[in-house]
Length: 466
Image (cartoon, rainbow, N blue to C red):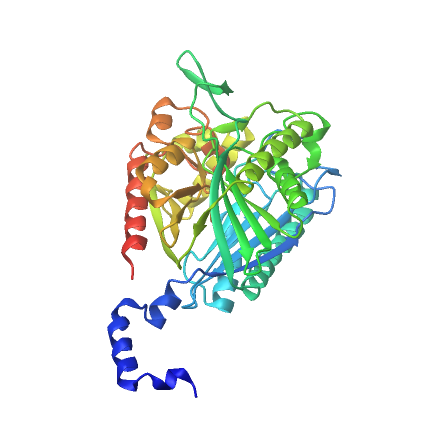
């Protein structure tokens, strides 16, 4: 006889009723479960020779390859069916015009929510020029246009392909978080009298944190390692190395991590460090040195106990209009269109075309921002543009209780995003960089508070959403 049959049925039923208020309902348990995770990688190494992005002063295309370029994707899928995809891209940056057909294709094919695909550019300055990106930078000679267009179309196809593959790979996962430090990022805004110039400023602000997310399968095997750092991809600055394709220090760090953890995919998510450069810098050897240091910081985190990350993700996304200074009149534009500086001339010509077509001149910059929260354990803060380090430091203080991970160069890069301090001081990030992005500026000083309030609003939405 089964002993359980000796227990009166009415007692079992009564016990179930007593415990019911303390047990999670099946729907609630499913909704709060850790998302499934999918990983995918595609090679995007270009055919040589090809023009590299990031510097207007390069004189010729790259003709050598030091490390392959990759695009990687990590998809998150809630039990409710909601999905989000991080895409880590080995390139200087992407624009809205470049991404629009990719995002439209993905939205049509997978019905992804607005903001659900975040391409994070590594900002290596040793990857190819892309169509419709950095429009004010010196255009390459006519003979190189076909190679750039061919690579651009290939990359757009790979972006669609890698997102689709990551979504198809979603499976149960265990997530863990930790943070380390690497000290090669140095503020590059040096002061000469009343001017701000490029240089090493060891007393300037920098963000040395190295956030790390480890993704394991249910069998305990490590599937992916996400890591970040807030620093420009500009280790390579001179000589023949300037004409070599490479993923920069972030790619070398990935290689070390994947050798240390066979079978895992290492993905780099760029931080908010647009006014920080690697120090020292100059040659490929410097990039490899920084990659080794960064990988060591990540391995140090992986070798210590890490904090579990659980719960479904919640996403809030917005696009903020950042006001520019009043644009110049036709007389100034016509004068600039005769400038001996080709970059100044290109910007003025673009504005004159708008005037001649009866269209308004730009008075603001549209900037995507997003918050992705995993349970109550980790909150990604994503901002488009080249975001200076003041934002990273302030957001970490302001939202400390939410365990923030700031990410820059997300979605697209319309221009630099300076803080109120940087706008007041002036310099490249405020003024001359806008020439290459095709805007007359500067951005107004109130944008810092505008963006901080925007993040406060988005975080409050993911904290309270059922």
